[in-house]
Each structure stands twice: as structure tokens, then as C-alpha cells.
Amino acid sequence: MSASARAHSNIALIKYWGKRDVALNLPAVGSIAITLAELATETRVEFDPHLAADHCQLDGTNVDATRISRFLDRIRARSGTNLHAKVISRNNFPTSAGLASSASGFAALTLAACAAAGLELDRRELSILARQGSGSAARSIFGGYTEMRRGSAADGHDAYAAPLLDAAAWPLTVVVAITENRAKSVDSGKGMISTAASSPFYADWVSAADADLDAMRAAIAGRDFHALGALPEHSCLKMHALMLSSKPALIYWNAATITVMHTLRALRADGVPVYFTIDAGPQVKALCPPAHSKTVTEALAAVPGVQSVWPTGLGPAAQLLDPCCK
Ligand code: DP6
Image (cartoon, rainbow, N blue to C red; front, side):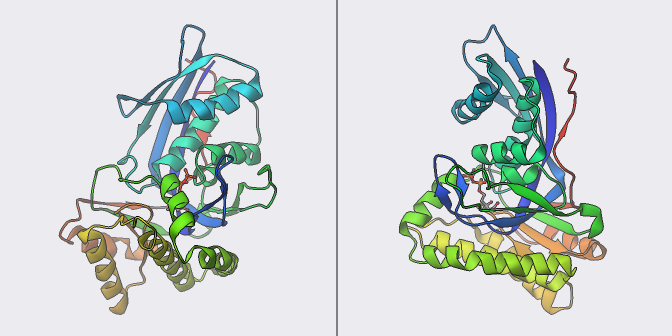
């Protein structure tokens, strides 16, 4: 009863921020994202009759297993097992610093735990399950360009992600500028709940989401790079306006985050096709056509406060690594 899986992180072009149901983790808005090739989580799950509780190790350190245990309970209930599990997970990038580690983490955990428990689910069901661990994880079940549907059903059966376009159909480079390696102070889930309760702009954010999603779908279908870049920049800045206007304010940026934004806008004014997006953390992700990857990478590496720069293409769907167990 063990299995391992690899899932890639994704970043949203049109952001998810806000929940319509906290217990089922249903998003208040849909989202569109891209899965990243170079940022991945590998997770091994082993259900073991000798364990009295779930154990979780992340990047070589034992961590609190509460959130993982709650998630495994859903898989135990569905598969009919009552065994506890040992979960060993590794990220090849900084955890919880705004690089979507919960997306790749819960997507890898979903695949590995279902396989270890003998549950055979299709990708849509895997996506629904992953969403209950973390909303953005629903998208990392798939590769390339993906869309997460908000859904409207109370039980969440229509809130899942689906592929929009293969990675190879429209190559894109994302240059991730790391400006801080520590975990963020307020995790996304808590931040969203606080925003919904306190930002005066929250209702407008929710009501504008469908128009943003329509525009992004059209940009992808039409391979319109300038729309593909401009829409995420706007979506991200709108989301950070919500965060800033929450009580207490959620300020995820540091000084280097802001310098990187100005650097990218100056590059664009000089004719380099590049845009940015930022999640709930201080890292900036620059979006550009692959031909401009070197220029953007060099420019970001030179910004004071940028600690490292990771260029990546678009990545594949989550996959099982050793379904036959070791
Ligand atoms: C800013 O998926 O981490 O990255 O569902 O509470 O686990 P939970 O939240 P999470 O939030 C992601 C927020 C975001 C935007 C996005 O990825 O769409």
C-alpha cells in the first residue's frame, strides 16, 4: 500500500482569491493557470498497519500532519481503509513562499495517496479531491494551460480544473525571481477568509471574475501574447489591492518585489515583451516568449535583493512514479 507521485507547481494568470464554501474549499471565483516544468514536488505515501497516527516529512524535516491527516481522511473514507500513513515529500523550490508549494504538494499527495489506497479515479475526480486539499492543487493535476471552474453546486461536484491547451501548443517562459526564502507570514487560505470578511473591494473582485476569465480564454485561443501578459498583471494587482485593503492588511511584497515590478515595466517600455504576476508572497514571476528568456533572466538577476532567478517552461500533468510499490 505505497505509491509515489510527482506534480508540478502552477501559477495563476487569472487569480483565485476567496472561497464560496470554506469547509469544502470551494472557490468564489474561477481561475486560469499555467503548470511549471522546473518547480515540482515528489511525494511518497505508505499506509502502514503499524502506525498509530499519520506522519509527515517535508524536505527531510518532520512537520505537523494535521492538514495532511484531514485530507487523508477523505481518501480513507472513500477507499474503506482505516490505516495511517507515512508521507514523505520533497520540493525542489522554497516551500510556502508564494511559489505554489501547496498546489504541487496536494496534487502529488492526491495521486500518491489514491494509488496507495487502491482508489482508481479519473483526472476530474482527482482534481476535485486535490481541490479539497488546496484550491490551486486542482489545477496541478493537469499540465500546460488549465482552467479551474468555480462551479455552483453546494457539494462542489462541478468545481474542478480542466486542461485548456497543451504546454507544447504555445511555449512560454516564466522567470521566477526569488526575493526571500522564508515561509510567508499568512497562508493563502487564512488570507482569503480575512479578505472576504474585511476588504471593501471584495464584492467587485468576485463580480469581475467571469469577464477576466473570458478575456484570458480568448487570449489563449488567439495566441495573443500581449493580452496573455497584460491580463495577469491586472488580475494580480487587483488581488494585491484586495490584500492591501484587508483588515489587518496583508502585505506580501518586500522592497525587491517592487523593484522587480519597475524593472519589468521599464524593460517592456524598451520593447521587451514581458509582464509579471505575483502570488501570496514576495516572489515575482515574469512571463515572456522563450526567445526573450535570456534578456529577462539577466535583467532580474541584476536587481538588488533578488536572491536567485529560475527560468522555466511550461510543465506536464501530475504523474505516478512507482505505482507498483517498493
Ligand atoms: C494567490 O490554493 O494556496 O496563489 O485553497 O486555501 O489552499 P487554499 O489556497 P491556495 O491559494 C492560491 C492563491 C494564489 C492565487 C492562485 O493560485 O490562483
